Length: 76
Image (tube, rainbow, N blue to C red; front, top):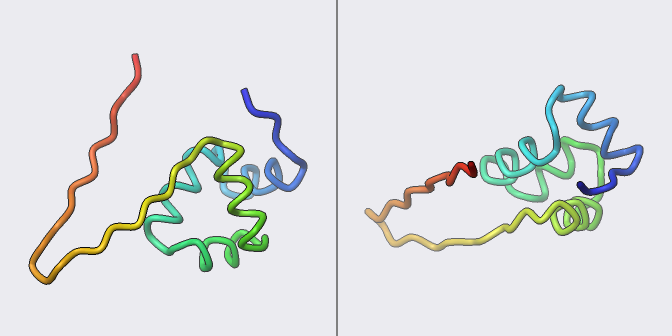
């Protein structure tokens, strides 16, 4: 288990969810800059949180008409 800072815990309490669930969804939907702004932290802090929690961020460029499907693997 990763040790969380007071600020990390405050964000979890504000959103009533763990960061491990909040961050991937927000970064995917809004991007890193908007996510950091909404959470009230710097982009550097957000990047550190993602690294600390083991959340990988990948950029994908799609040509017109292409789509991408994301599948979540559940761990038993």
